[in-house]
Length: 192
Length: 174
Image (cartoon, rainbow over all chains, first blue to last red; front, side):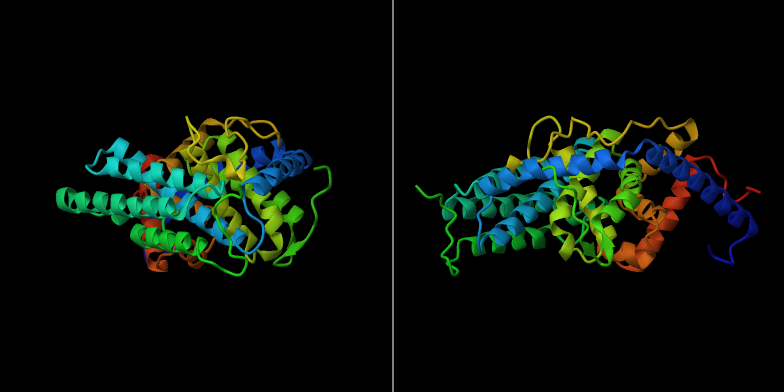
């Protein structure tokens, strides 16, 4: 710590570090003692076996798959942030949180349609636009009634980086690219 | 299923080496962030399962695993009660604990410190818990996408909060 701080505080810092380190070392030792690496590796193999058929069923092969994965990852990121913001709103209610719930529901619907390749472009674009509008509306209400912003609230949440509006815009671009003809003319419409 | 995990190098370390070295630390990290042990176990296993197939392309495995494990823990939160994340990724049921070992019982002091960390405001909590996990200020700043000065400021506030919650008087203690 700071070498210029008073002795009392330095002693306090040492005491704090000691308490934290002792507890964290104790927890780690117990987790290590209970940990069965072989069982853990077997569990990972089992998870991969479960995930592989689902990936075949829900994700296209070929040039478009990474784009779809990127879009799904972006949706997951936004869904997690919105879930945290909604959770914060339940603890300290703020006007506009109902718009966040609508946005989250639209994201879930969008992801399901994209992952299953059953969603047509107009529907995907409508949902993306709705998410944009709902997030913007929640932010507008926060600014006018609570003198704060969604980003300010979200910045208190672990894992939040960048602005929500930027991430929604990134999602819009990812979804648009999904439907662009590209090499194999990948279509998200299922073959019928 | 059935084949042993391959030991492909990512940034010079094999999957198995990192799994054996980091798995318990990751569980402790998520528990300190507020997850229950079942949820932490499950999220860590899910993160390693995702990492397995991408191991060749992960340049900083440790930072990557901490980020993805936290995301998986949030996903479990989001799906609590009803499955809000569609089953496209076929995530295992978070209610079912992975069979990776026995649940541990923390003593009173360990639980007190864990609870104090978990009760910190979000950004302070993440900065502090990542610091405890051994990440440098620069690494934490990169992870959180913020300035190193903001990391230091949050760490100072976190330590003040922790000292207060743990009853450590940093002005008069000797």
